[in-house]
Image (cartoon, rainbow, N blue to C red; front, side, top):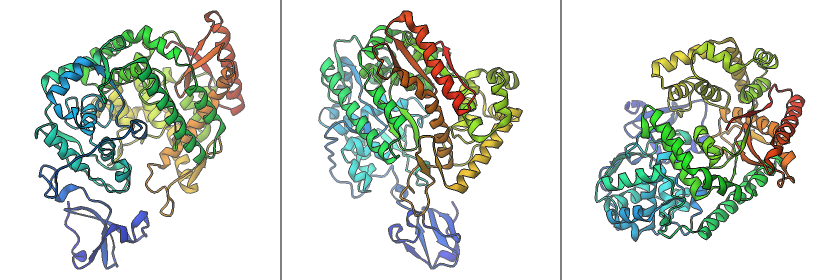
Length: 584
């Protein structure tokens, strides 16, 4: 890092909370500087400079024990609503023999719930986190929010009165006997770009590693000795029911608050209520009948993936499968920055190949080329609209042009249409077009970059990209969007209360398209709401739905009915798409 400019040497450092830069209120003359302590703000003609916020522990090396560290004791959360408040950990079950083995190696978890939950995250939950790039622990994120949650100090964290390193040093001393180290936290003025502390060293007993890997590869549904990791109590039908009820109530409360903030859009609210009120029996049945086949599908993914068990998709599939065993029914959460409804740790977010094995008794209806059709319509990409309206098959066209398989191209087009940056820029998250191509098609960085350029050189993609950039400029100029449900979303400004959100112009771009996608599917929900005894939409998958008619002999009639309803909606909206029957 560069030295602090000489012109600042005689200037006063003003605490961030007292500075004119607080809440992003800067002027055109504001300059960003760097020195050995990190980032600061100053004005060329001013007499002071300001640190941009809490600094990392750079002045206190993470490998050096803090001088003010005394005896630490955290009681942990009083209930398990933390699983719904943060996205880092989930409730999970294991075999009693596995938990006994872990407790023998790490006896501190018998007495201290925070240490038990932290170890659960490191052994079981962290493999789902996409920010993690390794298998045995190195590089796993250690976000302060998660550490505060397991310590029972979320409120203190949110009021900036929680020191994450206290929790980490406690674990280092009590749990790992010193064999635990982490990297520093790197501050950035944009909250979504902050670099989490990460595990630098983690020594897990080989016996425990082997037992956990076995847990991740095999189902526990029929295991009599199944227990909850966080409490050590037996998994029973009643405890499963209690967990399901708590989850449903929490999700509905949160959803009501969020939808109210968004102006109470009726369609997302009605879809969420319908899905979260479905009977649980149908979900229990697919787990009971097909969970072994789903685990086998995950094993095939591992065998086919270049990195085997270390592959991100494989780790994600196995983690979600265990979550589905513990709570088979998805519960859908509303989000502030998108109309889409998300059901974490559920069938909805399970890898498509693995999900197909689990829900093989359901029927999948997908919107054809929905992302492209919606975005071409919204952004007025006329060449692409004309191509789709004439019956053109975009996948055949692009496969022939780029020479990559459909899954890679679908992921790439998702990156373009739903908010990812087309080119990499410093500090951006990994959902870039080049990385999407590299991950799905196992390409080298050079090959992925060549594929990206080749894809964007196609006249239809060039048209789409140009229209997208024009729409981005319009949103930046207007400062907001209003989606088809009447929800207004604004870009944060220095005077707004949204300065600390992750919202960006790409967020608004994606939300605008996602609302239309949901509007297209709404007539299918209208057909089944009130007719659940005849046909149910069992799963909402963003651009499609899985249905289950009560009478299998009437499946064709229901497919035709839902297709007709969506076709009329698409025609009314002027979007060239339709609901197609696909194999799960």
